[in-house]
Amino acid sequence: MVLPFWYTHDVKTAISVDDRLLSDADRAAREMGLSRSRLIAVALESYLRSRRQEDITARLNEVYAEEDPAEARVVKQIKAKLRATIKDRW
Image (cartoon, rainbow, N blue to C red; front, side, top):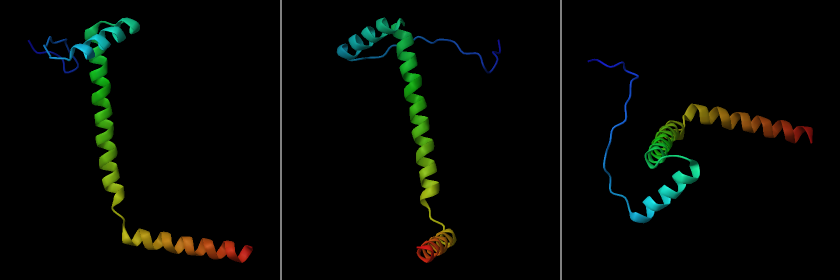
């Protein structure tokens, strides 16, 4: 049987979690009206989304950290002209 690409299903898994963390998770799940499994799934989705965002931000920072010498010269010239214009007006 071939499933459509968008089809997902739940998979059971076993993980080891500190007693206190599990107790806190159970309390949060009750307060939120979620099952423990759903709380963990939501938390994991949030964590993975955050990691992807951090990765994208890191890559963008790398790209924009590289200064183009020609661009730096143009910015310096513009700033100099702006300073001269302001100085002349005052």
